[in-house]
Length: 164
Image (cartoon, rainbow, N blue to C red):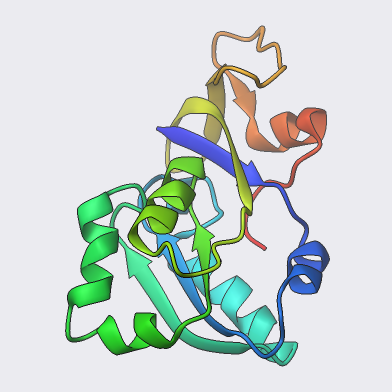
């Protein structure tokens, strides 16, 4: 499973957005759900905060895989979602870096903030998620064969674990 973490705190995200923009929060419901950034809970958390701070969140969209180009691009043509995505100024991705790039490819005319950093791969159970291998460019040594908790990895990397 891919593991990504937030590059931004909620205040930094909030301060980077235009309050007049029409925002869609698009959340991966696969890996991002498991490591806490996305899924229904992550989607609801950030959308509720943004709305509470006066932002115009026009849609909350949950997608099976944020990195699947055909699923993301379908939102542009599907009658149920086309009008929402046409009017959006910003698509806020709750996904790994691949998911962010996929959204940019499908919606090159929309602002897609860079909110996460893919740090590696790992495993999960119903009780824990552990980072076992880092992607190239992530300077982190994992000595335990069982991997490292996401909180520990985030602390050592200077990023944020979990939802906004």
